[in-house]
Length: 180
Ligand code: DQA
Image 1 (tube, rainbow, N blue to C red):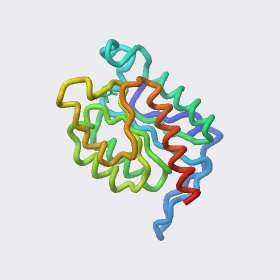
Image 2 (cartoon, rainbow, N blue to C red):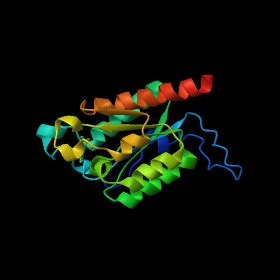
Image 3 (tube, rainbow, N blue to C red):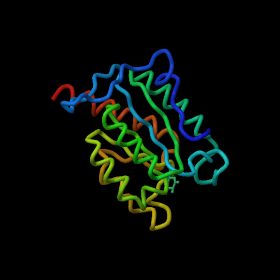
Image 4 (cartoon, rainbow, N blue to C red):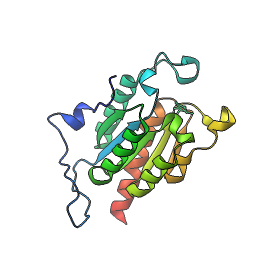
């Protein structure tokens, strides 16, 4: 996978009607709701990177699972990966006006990036954090995630299935918000 990518659902003929927030700051009307699925550093190496920890599935496999899950939930996704902290932060800022929610695996930046946490807090969007591995069973430096402070939910240790659960979580949060 070369840097950023987005799912056929989000980029193709079925592109959701997403427009930037207008000057009043109103959220754009988007149907189906667009969810940014953001992936941090080294996740482009999935499939070959420490498979005993991260498994054999590639990021393309995870994107396909997310696209399938989003379809079933009547959501659209924009699936991206970057190795650059600033780019991840810019995407979170972009989501602020473009998306209804964020699923994020911040990878190593989970444990280091106050700036990413700040961007997520500023997004004012429902955020679900995902980790393929159970970070709490691993080295102590992985036990703290700054990103978790900005997340409504955190899923870890369930491999790629965690992404599908995160999308379900976001769908539930959005449905609840519509009722409130
Ligand atoms: C990870 C866990 C992080 O600690 C690590 O730096 C990663 C991947 C996971 O998905 O399990 O790169 O986020």
